[in-house]
Length: 265
Image 1 (spheres, rainbow, N blue to C red):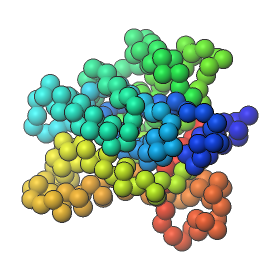
Image 2 (cartoon, helix red, strand yellow; image 1 turned 90 degrees about the vertical axis):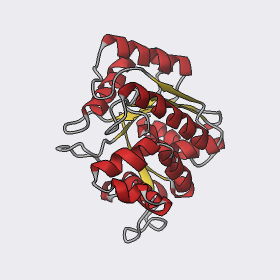
Image 3 (cartoon, rainbow, N blue to C red; image 1 turned 180 degrees about the vertical axis):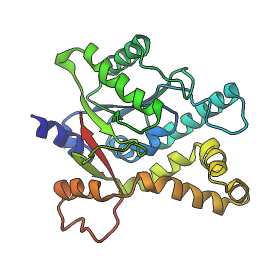
């Protein structure tokens, strides 16, 4: 049964006929831009094939900048998310009004998430794997979704897939699946680029290259690429999974590949 469900996730990104219907997919994360960063590629594949995808950010991202006031930043990040929504052709992009950096696993937010999953009638839900060392909001997002699933109708339970927060440590993460996103890499990159407050301002500032990045469009494109590729290149753990599903002949170890790996919950 588990193998069949995982196969549904991966092969429905390759062929609409495999799913035999329009799938309803949700990606639930902590901050506006993380759906794009962690699942933008697979989202682009799903929407390209006619499946319906909803993004849900559990905070409004109001702390992700070095100078903007939180209220102004939240409004700006909402607009950036809506731009990314159009790029990825996402059907819905819901942003809750919890503060960035202070997401708590409460009954209130679990109920909101459970209701949203039910209202969307989700077939597949992607969220963060809650593990040691990750961003606190991201880890709480994973726990919130996990515990919210206990409120769902067992007869309509979606498949849950975990995304790894790349700050997590101290555990073995070998994805059950890895999905080739090379054909939609440019779309994923563009959706991440929609979040200019992060990829042109906040992240370059954090890395000490703000003035250089602000100085030219070429440097902005260069930074966007190097900011996004670590979340998209097939690392050794992803390579194991992608070779399992696609074959070693198509994906030899000595060549770089663009892919996203996910763990079945």
